[in-house]
Image (cartoon, rainbow over all chains, first blue to last red; front, top):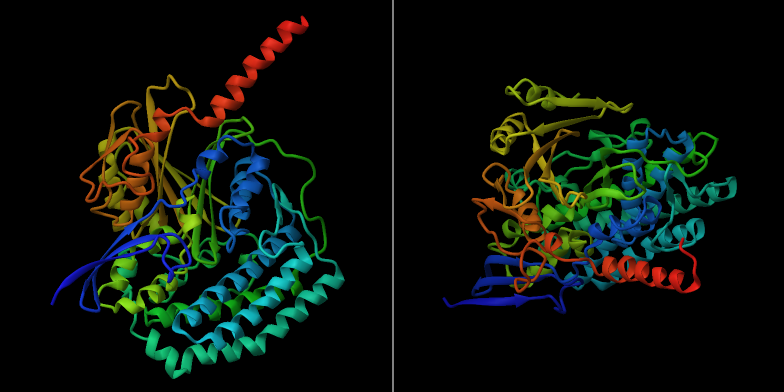
Length: 360
Length: 171
């Protein structure tokens, strides 16, 4: 059999974002993969060190669209740790609500694209229509459909009055029946199963070896979720079930994401039930002393970690973050080998990759 | 602290001092400075034996241009707790062992800091460029003057000095 090398990307019709793969194939089967990155490397980490702490809240939110809120939340948490700031209780709950609304929209977008790649476009439209509820919620509450502008150092920049709380609760309730139907299709539909079960498998031991995180790890049976392993905001007071699947394949990762949408909706409703009254932020512009801190959060794609070092000036001495996609890319080597060429876009999509986050 | 971090603390060798702080959620963050770069591999091996995972690596440029040392911070996750080991290296010609024999995911982290800073990683299995194009010389951030510094700070200061001199205002 003849061996070919096929270039896939960076501007390939089947890929949504610019990553470049060199795929060695034997016939229709993938033999090995080489990943070539750097097409959207913007030097954002370096830029943050040229801007003050307040400007960086805006900059970090623009790293990525789908998980945009996770970045300023985690960045502000690192600053608050260094400055010893204790944010108001209500702000903790409002941070959870903002993050979970983003998770709903992000996860549904990924599973919708999966249906589109398979060619199941009626399902794609169904999922996107359900996701539109989350988009409307963001637009109504925050004024934007992607960047929420919800965070500040010492709390949040938005509040929910009684009317908006009722609206949010109703919209979350409205999504439940559709979600149950969508989950049933992803779990039981024969066409979905044919294209996703046993495809792009990442066994449990390889998932540990590649140190993958988020739904990619949980789809391979690793029960690690930052919200329970290293709680932050109000997660320690909420009931957060950790969702896992054992298949390690494309469908397992999609099922984790869909079930985590259900968990996110439940978390939002828990917050609406338990959120105390009170201020949403501390007053003034706090001074950030010299120090260093680690802050972590569970972004839609998994563990996001920020390391911040300050020297008493108004700019970070060093600000580093590692996004969940960073390790998940490398695991594509395992997921792709032995699979069909036609499944490449499906497998790449199954890690829900974010290139703008990865390359920064 | 979690059992994994406790297990690691039990494996500390002479000279490894870990300072820990636990927040109100019960999450512990530990910090350790390794004065000898040769301690990195045994330190990381002890983390792995305790059940740890490499989270990420932070290399950075000292702000002081005359600084004789530079640092790399290695961040490990131990079941939710985080342990950071900072290694001090000479500012020029820094070399460090690759962590890839212990933690596979060190691969991309090490490739990334090699292209940005003047640091060589010994025994890296695949020391190719990660993000920066292969035609650009390495140690980008150590060598190049940022465009923003060149056009904003430098020229603006000169311009204002000239304006102040012309208007007779020395301030």
